[in-house]
Amino acid sequence: MNDSAPGGTGTAAAPVEERLRAALAARARSVGPADLRPPRPPSPAARSRRAPLRRVTIGLLALAAVAALVLLTVRNEQPRPTAPARSPRPTTGTPTPPPTTVPPEPARPSPSSPAP
Image (cartoon, rainbow, N blue to C red; front, side, top):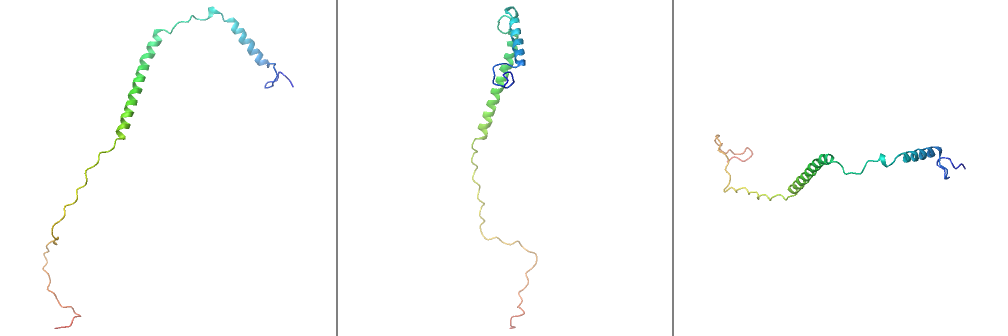
């Protein structure tokens, strides 16, 4: 089995890995303390831009939370009971038929009844 084969279990590195390690080591040796910037806190200008935006965002989120709480409370409130329905007033007496303009006909004997 070849030890330098990619994906193998050997200890030898592939040629690409060796080149990468050498390039990274050379770059690390080329950086010195003079190349690094001194540690200092962020400038006030960077902070001043973020602070109002953060305050406004937090305020809006708090306002939205309060509005949602109010809406959920109002919706879950029990409805007030309605007044009972009134029963219809009972009518007194018997209803009378409407008056007609045609006079009633006199009673006639039935054709199948015996004659008197």
